[in-house]
Each structure stands twice: as C-alpha cells, then as structure tokens.
Amino acid sequence: METMDLVIKKGVFTDWKDLLQNVLSQKESAKYMLWNPIYDEEHARENARKMIEFQRTHDAWLIYEKKSSQAIGWAGVTEVEKGVWEDSGIVIGPGFTGKGYGKQLLQCLIRYVFEEKKADKMICSCRSGNNVSRLLCQSLGFAYVAAEDKIDHRNGEHYTLEYYELAQWC
Image (cartoon, rainbow, N blue to C red; front, side, top):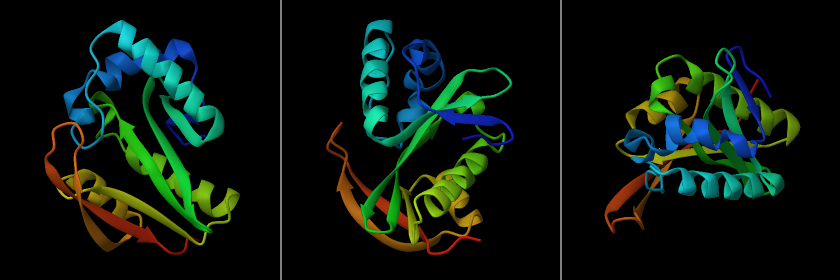
C-alpha cells in the first residue's frame, strides 16, 4: 500500500536498525503503547524477528518514509467481529510526526478495511491523554463511542482507553 509520502508493507529483518533509531528507542513512541523502549541492538534484532513472524499471519505492516526509505513505524488491523475491524496498534516515530503521515496512514488503513476487507465498521482506540491520536481519528470522521479502564502491564498504572468508530466510508 502507498500514500503520497509513505509505503506500507511487510517488514524485513534489516529494518531493525531503522526501527531502533526511529521508534523502539524513543520514549515518546512507547508512552501510549504497551511496550518499553529498547536501546540495544540485540533486543532490536529480536524484536524485528518477532515482528516479521507476526506480520506473516496478520494484517500488520511496517511504515516507510518514501523520501528516506527508512522504516519509521508500524501499523495493523484485526477483525474483532464479523465486519468490524480495529487497529491493532499504530506508531510513527517522533522524528516523523507533524508531517501529515499519521493522517495518510490512517486514510490508507480505512481504505484497506472498507475496500479490501469489506468492513461495515472500523474502530480505533487511544489512551485518553493521547490528544494527537484522538484528534486524528476525529478529523477523519471517527466518533467517540466508549471508554474502558485498563491497567498498563508495564507499571501497574490505570489508564482509560477511548474507542472511536467509523461506520461508513465513501
């Protein structure tokens, strides 16, 4: 899949270097996600192996910036019930935010689930404090539908996960 500035495709092992530099080692990237930053090459390589294996059997991809050819993040979707697709995690490294890439990426995922997967509905979720993700969802027509209290397994802290739904796409 492609957008004006991005290529979204299955990753390859050598992407571990880009991912370590652009995403995995960035505290800002992990803040609203369910993983801890990775700072060493050994763990980054292991992460890349696991990610590639996961991508083989799931609708999940790496995100590449066209102009630099670097892996700058990842995204995925999963069918949570018949005709209902939900994001399974979307992250773009902080050095690549503020360029409209998130909007391009989410528009691409919307097209994918509605055109390729024939979805009736798409759901995106984000932590209540993640205003950038919330505003992105709302800018593309997603409407708030629910919130759920969760516990972050990394530190035992409580947080609220908000759900946004897009029921039709033109």
